[in-house]
Image (cartoon, rainbow, N blue to C red; front, side):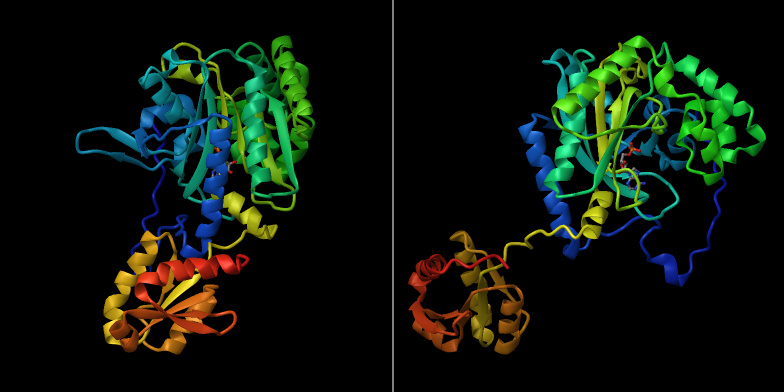
Length: 443
Ligand code: AMP
């Protein structure tokens, strides 16, 4: 199925918006890097600890990969993909999600012949042409964990949920709830879908347009509707829990027992269905109760995805979280991180000649492993010292005409104001000694 042609409202570029960032995209400014670095570090450490190996797939994939897997009638495929035709005639999409590309890579590279299951970790930018709003961007970052291959064992569902639970805890995000559901399998789901469709048909004239479309193309997604007017129908809809087959019921129970064992609190939510076609059995989503930004990590089992790609059925389970949403919640909850390691040593130059020689001194300190701050563009000593103070430095290395002549530097302790002249060849030793003498708490 090809993506539906969406009517494009062409806006005439004005001088004002010509050089603006595209709608729904965002810059990540230096002040925010501390959040990104913390998330990156926490995710990498978890991946390493739980044995998930990093995988990177291209930003561009064949459009057909997502049509086949995510589902031809999903919003992602119908409306949200950024697609392009190359000069060579390929029809490509900026990846809207990570699971299908990881499965494609698994199949392409014959990773099924290695020890199973294979556990993957990825992070990077994804693209969906959605309506931008809080927590919903057109370019957003995801961190994902996937377990592919081997047998369908509920312990892997629990393990994926566990790693996301630990990610949230590692990031000190509080007040989270985990919602879990089973959307059944090939055997029981069609039956449930039929019952659901029959139930909703009774209210056809009262449903929102989206639900009317869902009723025709994928009734399960009726349960996904957020429209206030459709909520009463959802509440009285046939209960999925009652309709899944014995095997899916057993599977769900086993996942929940593992979560109990891990003391991970969950809420069973029989209306949780998630938007993508490739899920079967377990689906899950984490939310922060004090934020209405939407789901944080979310995912589920997708044993049929490999089949959609023409391969044999392959057990698989995984999920992804939006990084911007994590940061938003961390900011709302005022999660505290130590700021970047302060540059404890700051180089202050006095005069042009000293400025010329200062880069060499910085290099000498760098090769001794001493991070050094500087404001080489500033000429006034006062302004440089002010900058040193702002950066939380404790020692200033002052270097001027006299020092060049004497091959020395002045080391000034910014906490006490005491200063001493030391010869250049002893500079590193004297700095290290002073840093050791009075360890200073990170500011
Ligand atoms: P999905 O790939 O739709 O299963 O989404 C997984 C997670 O990615 C969601 O639970 C969100 O945390 C995040 N996410 C999905 N779409 C967006 C978006 N447009 N902007 C920001 N985050 C998103």
